[in-house]
Every structure is written in C-alpha cells, then in structure tokens.
Image (cartoon, rainbow, N blue to C red; front, side, top):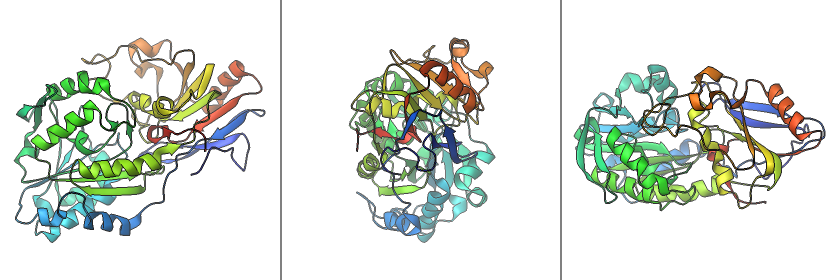
Amino acid sequence: MSAAKSSPETPHSVKIRFGAWYDDRDLELVFPDGWQVALCPPNDGPDIGAAGIEAAFANPIGTPRLRELAAGKRRPCIVIDDLSRPTPGRRLVPAVLEELRCAGIEAREILLLAGVANHRPMTRHDFVLKVGAEVLDACRVANHFSWDNCVPIGTTSFGSPVEINADFLEADLRILVGSIIPHGAAGFSGGSKLLMPGIASVASAEAFHRGSCTRGRYAVVETDARREADEAARMANVDFLVNAVPNSHMGLAGLVTGDVVEAHRAGVEIARRVCASPSPPGSDVCVLSVYPKDGEFLQYLTAFAPWQTAPEPLVREGGTLVVALEGSEGLGTHWLFGPGMRLDPGRAPGVKGRDIIFFAPCIDRGSLPPAARDDTILFRTWEETTAWLQRKHGEHASVSVFPCATMQLGAGRR
C-alpha cells in the first residue's frame, strides 16, 4: 500500500481489510457520487517469506540462538496470543518447534500455552486457526486462566503484584510468541506484555491496568506500562522472544527474535515504518477499520490509533467517524473491561464535536453494553451507513479511509 489516494478504478470506491481470522478479505466501500474519497493505507511491507523467518531465528538480538538456549532443557513452554491479536502462529510456532527439535526436544514435551490475559479461553477451532492442526497433534496445549493457577513471584517497582501462570513458571525454557502493532497504553504491543497481563493473574492485571496503563500513549514505547511489563518479564525469567511485525494482510513485514526487551525494541523500529500512514486533516468523514482486531466489538477503540497519533485532527468539528468491524464473535469477552466487570468504564468515550457511528454486520444491538444500547448509531449494511452519512453531509463531502486502522499510525501527509 502507498500514500493517500482515490481508487483508480472507481473514484468513489475503496477497499478496507475486514473479517480477520474468520473471513479475511478486502471489502469494497462505495461512496456517493460527488464525494472525494482518499484511501490512507500504511507504509506496509512485503512478506519476508520463509527465508526471512529463518534469518530472524538465525540472528537473535541479545541472546544466543534458541536451539543453543534449549540445549539440555526438557520442559519448554511457548506462550502464544489469541485471535484478538494478528500474530501468524501457523508460521512462527513451527519455526520455534524446529529450533527445539534441533536441541533434542520432542514436540510432545512442549507446552503451548494460550496467553489470553482476561479474554475468553481459546477453543480447538481457535487453536487451529492460530497455529494449525499439526501443532495441536504434536504439542500439549492449554489456556491460561487469570483467576487460578497463578503463583506470586514479587512486586514491581510500580506496586503491582506479579502473579504468573504456574505451568509457565515450572517450565525450564520460557518463550513468548506475539506481534508488535500500536497500543494505547504500552506504545506498541508485543514483548513483555504477553507475560503481563498475558499470563498473569487477574489481580496482577487489574493493578497493571489501574496503574501504569493509565499513563500510556500510542507510539511512545518507554511508557510506565512498558517498563512495568518488562520488569515482570525479567522477574519471571523469560528466555526468548519471537515477535512478528504484521503487514496489512496479516503477513510478516518483519520478525525479531531474542531478548524480551532488546528484540522487542528492534521490532518497534520496524513497526514504526510499517504502520506510518498518510493522515490528511479536516475530512468531513473518516472511516476506521478495526482490522485486524475486528472480531470483537469491545476492540473498536483500537481503531482510533490514527486519530490519536495524527498531527492534526482527521475530522473537522461537526464531522463523522465511522468505525467498521465485522464482529464475528459479537461483543467479545473481557473479564476486567467487559460489561459489568470491575473495570467496566460504563459508557464508551466519545470524540468531542464529532459523531461516531458503527458499520458492523455481525453485531446485534441487544448484545451491546446496556449503557450504549439505546444511543449507539449502528448499521448492519454499508448501504444503510452511506444513506445516513449522505443525509447528514449532503451531496459533496470529503472522506479519509484507514483500511486497517488498528495497526496504523498518523504521520501527516506524504
């Protein structure tokens, strides 16, 4: 993808990414005649391919090669994130297993632990989508559960208790497999966040979210949340990190391996380039696709990464932000931030002086949180969405479209 532009085929038609994991595709959005539409894709990057994966494992950052670290080990644990994250586990976990095989470790000795944090447990179908059936046949597989089976190992300098999954702590080789995209509290995802809160107790996660996470910003990596998660990872003796930098089609624009802090920071620099996006200011309408987190309605705020990082407001006062998500899993699950949970904000934050509307084919109004059920402007079809927009904005309007906004950062005009 390249700089902001109107579609060359149809001036009023552009494509966004839609339906991550379940129906992954380009979705065409057609706008009214007379509207000026600018597509604002990320810089992106070509897939590094099998050779790129091999090179990343052969050249770890800050540690010996994984097969060297694994020598003499017998109880490895690999943590992988869930379907709310775009990590291409089908390509990365087999590469980890090969490194361990070269160290003499059989796959049946390896525990693959789903680092679901406070999301729902992964089903078999989820695991097949994430890592493939062959991995499930070869390895032991389990879900982290934040309400039980966690062991205290200390307290961070920020005051949060560090209580970590017992199976991970019992392992003699501890590996995290995740991905790096923009994150509102830690600057970027990935790295130590897959441990804290990924496989931490609900008490640790709550303290983390109530404390250091409240002081974060998109694209600023040295936040208190990142420092605290890094502290927890050091306390838990994480041995090796595998972090993807996804491209706009959930391919691999980059891959880093090695030390949980050093490799992550190297990956962040790749992600800054991949995620940077043209950000034309002052449109009448801005479309933000929640892809690649568009399976759950609860993830919709992640699509505001371009809005939060653009040098000037993307939408004029009185304009409209359209949040686009498929919502294959409906509302979604979060044991801390979900409706009625202990960190439930009650009402979703708005954007001052602008309307927010939702294009969400698989979201039923009855599944929305009670505080949002009556006043959320929600459409199941794009035709209904554009009809509402045209009634508000008339026959001539300017539109900016971010096709995978959750992994995009505002970077001004190019």
